[in-house]
Length: 318
Ligand SMILES: [Mn+2]
Image 1: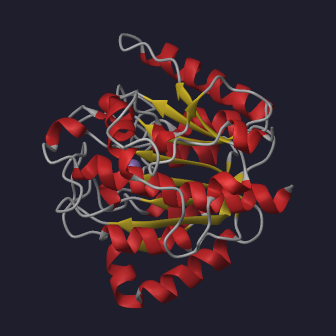
Image 2: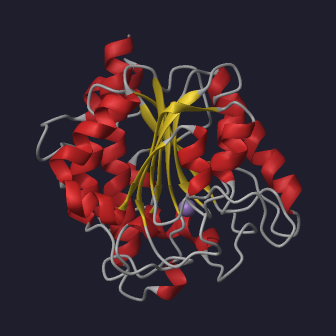
């Protein structure tokens, strides 16, 4: 049996979607193995937040919310499970009493996936998690980044700490994990700590598209810019759910009004078909502030968008 069949997800037309134990998009729960192409990983870490906590509960909530998602993409017609083997690899190890031990455990987990050539799609966790993920994934070569976010995450430090949810872009650029020439930060908005919060990314050579810029240029032009900047090299996609307007995603650690609709983000992610997506995450979902569950549902749908474009990359590289 081909790996993609061995790891085929539950078919919602056969097993009702409310039944059985929840996994990401109803994929098989498996240990990391060399015959898996794409692995979903929960990263229930939220010790990097300086406002309100809660994303530690996101992997469990998004697994539940993802029950609704079927197998075939509505626009592209892609069935990722026909293209490659996809599994739910469980959660990276964390210690809720020890930030540094958690970061080390997360990095080690993703290093194992890198060594097995599994492309990870992570669900945070707060937006600290790209730091340990990129330290594993981009150790040998820098990656381009598409960051959809309301905040630039380029602070040098917060409350005297260097690794937290407001610093991952700066650490990644400093550590040579991120190629600024192939990096786009989009959706930035909201009140700032200081007047020059956005300038680090600009000065480092990243393409910065604030939400004001996005509105002025329009979605088609923004997508064209993203495609041009990301180019043909390896790309890591990081979606901070606070990039989406809190009217749609209220369950997040630091809500910022005046942002993307879920539709905007779906269309942007779909435009990544043809890119060499080597990994991705959806972060900052905090289910405790959203009794409706729409934030987790939106995150689950974004995981499916990311899965489809990553499966195309796997298939093309075979
Ligand atoms: Mn962020």
